[in-house]
Length: 393
Image 1 (cartoon, rainbow, N blue to C red):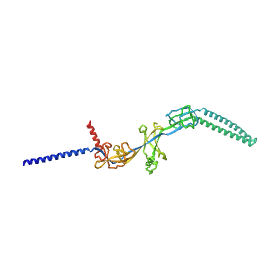
Image 2: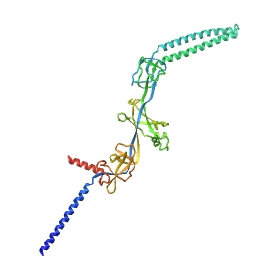
Image 3: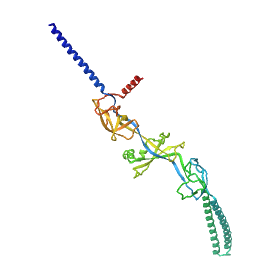
Image 4: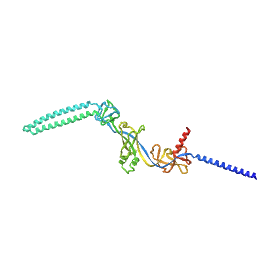
């Protein structure tokens, strides 16, 4: 009797031990399964605002670029300036050979002197004829002839004086001066070269660089967006445009902001774009005609969905993100974005909505379709990384 009780008790204890061991083993397995789900930072999307920018290649030109061309033909005898030199309005730039033009002035002056003498002689004759005519000594016909001779002499004098003025003007043209303040451009011809008004090449160019124009192009689509599809005039749109920046060839931003001044009224049929001009102050003269850069035009986007660029991956030229569902499983979803971005975030135009959750870490490495994750916030992930860093030290 006692033996049977002991056997029964031993059997019960063995069963309990098996049950306990089984329970412990199941708990460990469940823990191991739970630990297999990676912790991934997740972000819940909500509408926000952002500042974006568009860039357009630009060419710089001085506010005035004046080609200097001679008014008369002659050999260059003296170049008084050098390339890149700042000059004032009226400053002497070039001197052309003056010999033939000075001779023309002397000849014209002699012709004037001769004509003045002829007028004096004709005047004396006419005065004498008038007195004789008043005394009825000569006929009216004879007096009228003397009057005509006087008028002809005066006409000849006027003609000679006009020739003298023209000769002096041509002589003055041999001294080529600057029509405005500015900077001297390239000087292709030096002393001894023949300068002519018919030459295709200018002597130089004077650029007024106190202010410069940056020329760039806007597409027809850009213009429609600018005018809100015609809901406001182009002039109103230009007036409301923000100031723009100029990114120089070395990547730096020019210290002075510019303002869009004009938009061409004609769209080039070959390019589908209109020419736009922005005005920049250039007090130091750093910007020169012919320089290049990029116009940076800022604009705001309100109530849009922003996602980190690192949360996306690309497949066949399309952007994708990993959506996290209520079961914490990730699923890839295609999205479309604006072409403009700030280098850190994308503006999503379709594929996502407010309230969606997306994975913002592990894209391209840890995540795959259908994977179950343990969502954590970006702050929690940062704290974990900091802790791990401290532990490794």
